[in-house]
Image 1 (cartoon, rainbow, N blue to C red):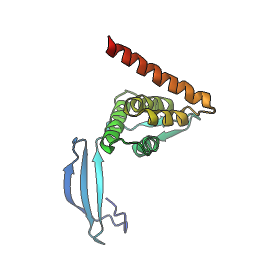
Image 2 (image 1 turned 180 degrees about the vertical axis):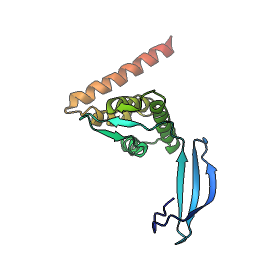
Image 3 (image 1 turned 180 degrees about the horizontal axis):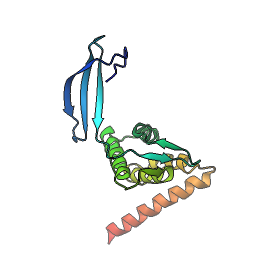
Amino acid sequence: MRCPNCNSLDTQVKDSRPTEDSSVIRRRRVCVACNFRFTTFERVQLRELTVIKRNGRRVPFDRDKLMRSVQISLRKRQVEPERVEKMVSTIVRELETGGEAEISSEVIGETVMEHLRTLDDVAYVRFASVYRNFREAKDFADVLGELSGEEEARLAAIRK
């Protein structure tokens, strides 16, 4: 592992431990050359995924980019980071086990929206506004109507 401080390739693992859900290994490392300490995370990757963008361009799937976009939609929302991490891990696992090595950005976007809808309504609307490229207030009203319709159906089912 290359040291982020001095770029030396001579580093040592000082401590390894799994995260709470055991899906990631956290490693504390130290650079032999400059004594800089840093942390790395190791997770299982079932397959290499390629994203097919709307313009047809193909790029490698980037879990961190997915996490950043979800975090942006959740900005200033009271959602525990562990729940966000678990949701992103679930999305990635779904994409990896979906059978296809190439996935359209539309499939990824819809999958994220599906999960955000159950996590936080405001984040869902924020993400949808960017993903679906909202142009006017009516677009927001349509999504809010979908959400309120689902809520009414859920309440009606509870009342029965």
